[in-house]
Length: 126
Image (cartoon, rainbow, N blue to C red; front, top):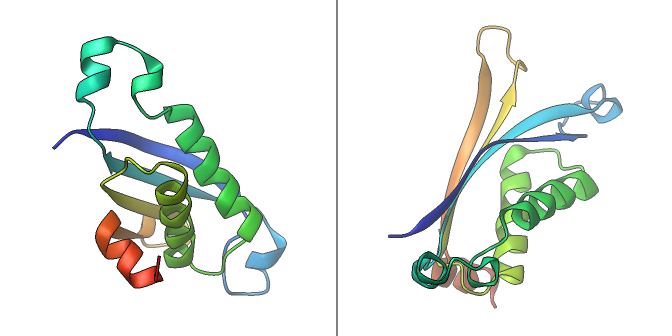
């Protein structure tokens, strides 16, 4: 299956449940695997025939920064919702979000969500 891969997208945002976390900007690291038919772009060599990677990164960062979520799980859900809405050709998305250096004994903590367009739309009532 074709996929666009974005690794290590840094998003600086307010994130966390504790009062001290709500007062500071913290980094999140996002990895996205976006399953989308890339055949036309592979043949044409035209940007209009694929998804714009820069736009995907910008949308992912904006939706998280605007929401200032408490949980990285919710941050991931917001990104999924936005990308499925903006890009109707996306078949499925795997998103990993890591919060680096929040636990002293770990390099990062994180979550991974995997959603299919059909599964996702059925759950959200679309």
